[in-house]
Length: 289
Image 1 (cartoon, rainbow, N blue to C red):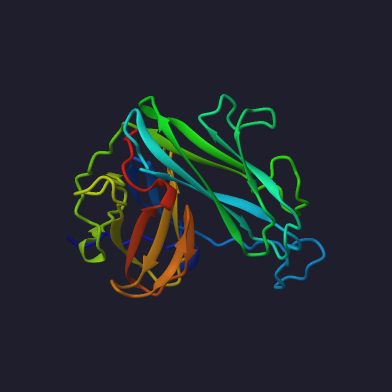
Image 2 (image 1 turned 90 degrees about the vertical axis):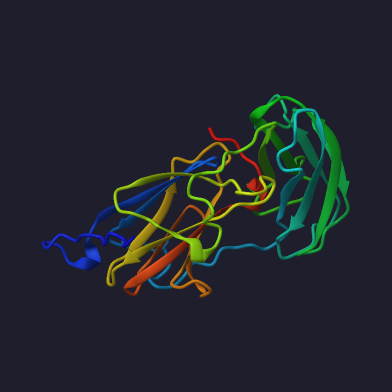
């Protein structure tokens, strides 16, 4: 099947053409995938910074953040799970002293407040770039996707940080549910990529065709024109959506562009291959909303 090439109005130069292209709806970690062609807009430089000169953010001092993982990622109802979290100092200097991180599993307050009951974990001082780990086993009950784990590192402000916005991290997860394999599988390899058709909609799921505990990925392909800025964007996200997009000009080739929910690039004319995946924390089984 040949792809449908984008149509460009004769009244507009190709570089500034606008096209509402094909739409790929990724259900179960639900994502609608739009291919659009549009005019680039310049971003103004911050006040006091000359055009063309990137602004340099200040990241002096310690900067604590945290990553959470769950094993198994989608437990059965009443199953015991292992919760692991890694605290990292992403700053440029040591914390200079110890601090406390709090773990919350399905708390009454979402997100938790300083008065919300959580399980404390004490940590010694962390050097710049260093990390430390906390772990707990717990039985999770209640089918559905309304479950969430929070870790709040340095909740009590024991460490002076320039960035206090990345101390509280959440991991939503589902219990006792499974995804449904979509009708486009098996498309887990570039060589099996399906054509993304103009003005069409495809319902897809990030559900591995043979093992629902494994991460799934979907490949699509489409034709692009030169001198046009293309934007690939995700929308209509499901409850636990965490889409990642990577673009290649050939199977086995290097990535030419990548992004989390959107990416924009100006290609040479040809066929392009897009790989869509989910974030590591969202891998495995997932429900269809």
